[in-house]
Length: 185
Image (tube, rainbow, N blue to C red; front, side, top):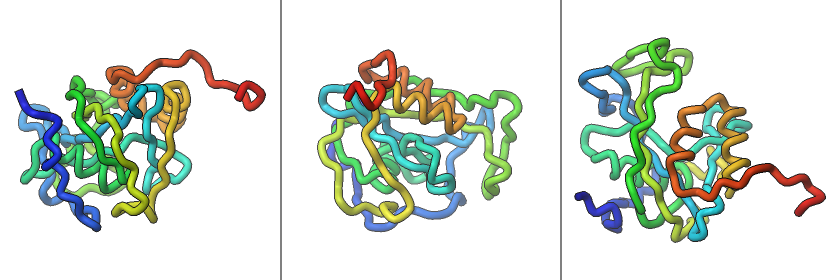
């Protein structure tokens, strides 16, 4: 069993990695392997969401392509640091989530453009947040915020990311039932 609580997994760089030449693909399906974290607070009633770097009004989970020189866990921890400035303890690996586009998703290896997103498989880890840094590599590209389960689910569906809802559902987040109105706070 892998020690998911190893604090030495994070090599905190001040700049995010760029490029896709070192991306890892599933040899059987051709899917691009993506890894990230579902970042929960200690009471597991809130999750960190980040704004998409391409679509500022869309909110997602920190994640990115698994590279040839990293394990999925190392990629998840690195991407969470680069995109959200979050550090914490990995609690568990979640089941793999497949691309929601199914057979319609193209298989593309190597370089691809934003009009042709390759088929992907998502490897998420549940992380208990211990620290939110005030500076991190992508802080000028992204915003971050805490969301309840229903707020996060709403944002992910609005962003057309049902596969990320699947990952959220597999985490230990407490599932509230409805979004409160302003008068209820």
